[in-house]
Length: 379
Image (cartoon, rainbow, N blue to C red; front, side, top):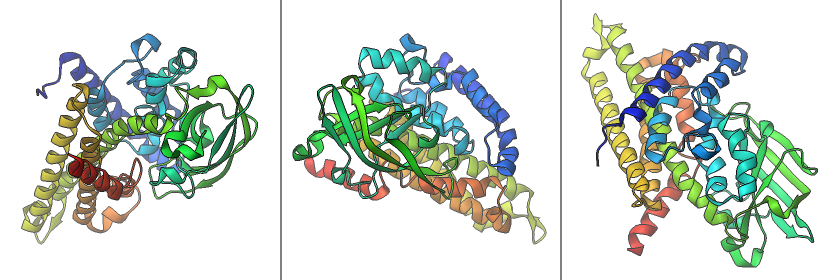
């Protein structure tokens, strides 16, 4: 396993890093207004980042898990609101279409996604069915010419601005998880409605959405892949999605560490920089160890996935460790900054709030531990 980046990927990494450095200058404007400046979206489009995982045949880069992780570690230095739509597209928002969508679905949606012209909402979670997907109540009833979808979804990112919704529903409740299917739905479909926005601690622009599907009629062609395979498609997408969460955690943690090193060298207390205090040095050392271990775990898992030797358990390990390491690092960063670290507008305060979500979405830390243990005991 060689972690030396090939020249072309190194160029993408450096270009992404330079773009992120430029876009960070818009953070103060975002904090003041609550709106993401248009220059952010245009900047991401200019590098073709919306098409990172989209096949070249549809106008994307066609990059794999390892390259995606490299790019996401750079993007994670940005406020999550700057690239929330892009983050979904690197994982579950596009993967199922790429792997299982019909030719017509791929030709209609993938070029638009690659150009940054299509925001996707991934509608799996329900008010009473989060980690326990089997408790889903949304149904897709077959009709003579397609399906009628009825149900509710909750905590859906991007729903209020989506151009495309991927929704999961039971086509056969008696089959359990093997009765869940996936569908593509345009938000102007009669019966689809965003019924509420829930503000969040951080991460999501404008909050996450509650959505309702009230007798939404869809043609047969809206089905993604085969009936009854939707849960499998979602889990396939979530495996790479969990690596993406790991990459986000590493990027956030690295930035928190760098900010803390800089602050510790500049902040004077008791007549000397606090970087000379052993208590601060130990916190910095622990942060660096966590981030080094997280990065190596992430890159090894992403490389293994590309080699066909990846596993769901390994993706869960990455998601678990990187998300928790990121939060430990962010917590220490706030402590090192003292009172200023608790103030809005300070980078480590933003990272602290945003890193907390990493242990929840794409499967909670507790679910990851269940999955890892199950794999160990199965072998």
